[in-house]
Length: 152
Image (cartoon, rainbow, N blue to C red; front, side, top):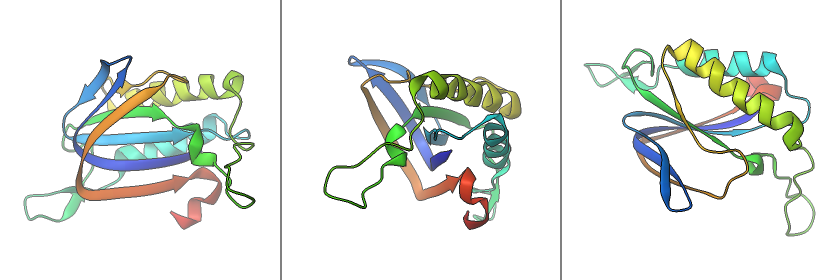
C-alpha cells in the first residue's frame, strides 16, 4: 500500500457537489492499493499512522499523535499513487489493484483505522469522481509504502 498522509486543520471530500465527509484537525490519508497488498499491510499501516507523533505538544514540538489530540481522520482511495511514469508521457497504473481486490482492502483499512483510533473516520467513495479540499497544517506531508517500510 502507498499512502500520502497530510496533517490538516480541516479537510472534506465532495461527490456531485455534495460534501460526503468533513473533518476538523487531524489527518487526510490518500490510500493507494497494490495488487499484492493484504490485511497485514492494512494493520501495519493503521497502527503506524495512529501512533505517529506529528502534532505539536504544549512546547511546540511534534510529540503527539492523532489519537493523543483526539483528531479526526479522512480516508480517500487514490489508485494514482501507483502510477508508473518511466516510459512515455502517459502514466501506467498496472500495479494498482483491480476493484475486486482493492475495494475490500480499502473498506478493511477504514474499519481497522476506526478500531485503532477508537472512533469513526470520514471517507470518500471508492472509484467516485471526488473533490478533496484541505488546509494542510504545517505543512506536514509524509509518504508511506508498505513494500519499502525501511525507507519511511
